[in-house]
Length: 355
Ligand code: PEP
Ligand code: MN
Image (cartoon, rainbow, N blue to C red; front, side, top):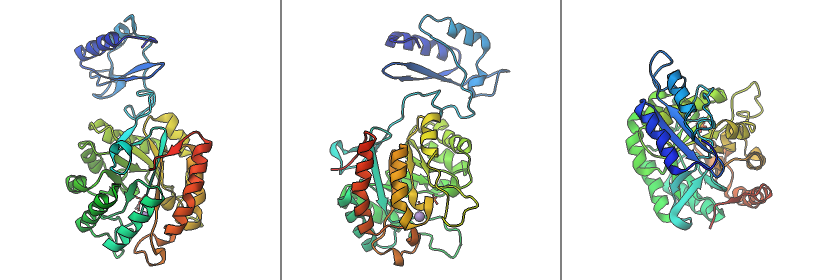
């Protein structure tokens, strides 16, 4: 749209689009207003593709006085692209312990999410929750349904684990992020979780993505361990295209030839995602490295690269953890990391959500 266009002119364009069977998604910034258009049909493209706009409709749009120019989104992902939606998406999560009771992910402030890899017992969860909350975390992580590479590994406490997470939420006012593995569990996990986590192994579980897309729950979509950036954004597109706008991407390392670390943490994905997409991007240096001694440095690097949140595994006694002990920080190590994280956020003109 032309600079300083009025609300009425935006409305006029939206009406025009609707009349032609297209949906308009306006994003109004301080300097620019962009209307993303979806849903063309006919010989020009498949339903839902922007390429599917009738060329004569495109010409009529271009000649409207308030329209500056009409550009085709060149990326295969549309709703997830920065071209379609130039303004940063901010995902809001109800979090009682912060001022106003809402934490924003993707805004100016950075969010610390921490907790055990897996909920093991009430004592383990409560001890960790209390400690990470005191140190400045506002979101509590913990898996109740765990994907296990081996069928003999610990696969989580299931709904019992979710109940413990809900208890920790009530006690410490933190919001909860936890993994959902299968479409049939989405409804139940939504009853307990504030943020759904879709794990690396499920990034391309399209039935699960569709189901999460039919909710409005904030959803953290981990990068598949061998997924390209484009495949990852197309997975996000699945959730968005079902109507759930609250998608948060999470870099958690990719599989490479390197064996010294569990995964190779792709820090460059953070600023790259910011360029390609309007969605928030967060960082999981625990799965990203698999090594406790590298979690601190990779957290700081992620912050410098522009992450909107950190997702960190912490355990009161990592050597006895049922899962991912080698990459879990001790409570003391987590406490020591916080002031360093604050210093980096300050250096880049951001700050942590804490109270
Ligand atoms: C986790 O967060 O504990 C986890 C299993 O993550 P990922 O899916 O990235 O391996
Ligand atoms: Mn883990």
